[in-house]
Length: 264
Image 1 (cartoon, rainbow, N blue to C red):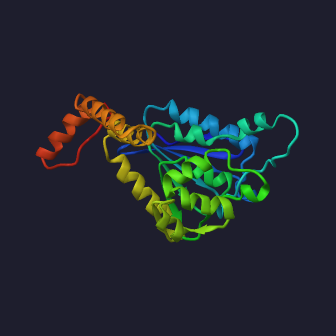
Image 2 (cartoon, rainbow, N blue to C red; image 1 turned 180 degrees about the horizontal axis):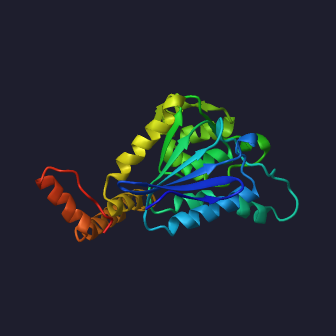
Image 3 (tube, rainbow, N blue to C red; image 1 turned 90 degrees about the horizontal axis):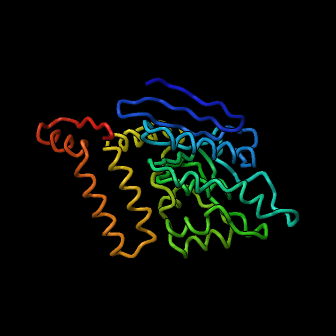
């Protein structure tokens, strides 16, 4: 298993082998304009998600930005002319990221504003530099977030704080974002790469199928009744008991050694 990368114009997609499987890194690569998302970048992100989704060896995805910002929004202005719905559809990318079956860790190297924040919300975990800030600017521009911001943000921080951000457009600092539950961890900027890799390694040390099922039960359970969610949890737990990794987990515990999971 070797390192390899796929070349795009506006993003970079790299795959690196680890002792626990392959890790993909999707990097927004337009630091000159603070990684503003336009139609071309959106299409490249969709394609990268397709590539990642087809890679059975990939165990985890990290998403980050180049330069001093994660992404400060979208580059294409919303104007009330032409096929507005069509242009919106071309820019919608958060669902592609959230649909990936493997864990997605968003590494926020700087500000995530507007559409940039909506993209970050589509990940499973978020680790941020202490200099990062977060905001939804759309109501100030006479529109609303339309790539999942009004739905994913309240699921993380609750409706009252989501409305606080959406109605005021104010910028929330990293420490406040941590207190609200918008991000999972905050570290100094020079520690971000090391801390994010440590988090990725912790996740990748777990059984791959179990990690996928954990993600599925939590995400799907948010839209189910409690009884339905418990049933899904029980069903997937039963399936896991038939995997080789489950047997390896039991054997490694008895033998007091680290497990060697294969994803089978």
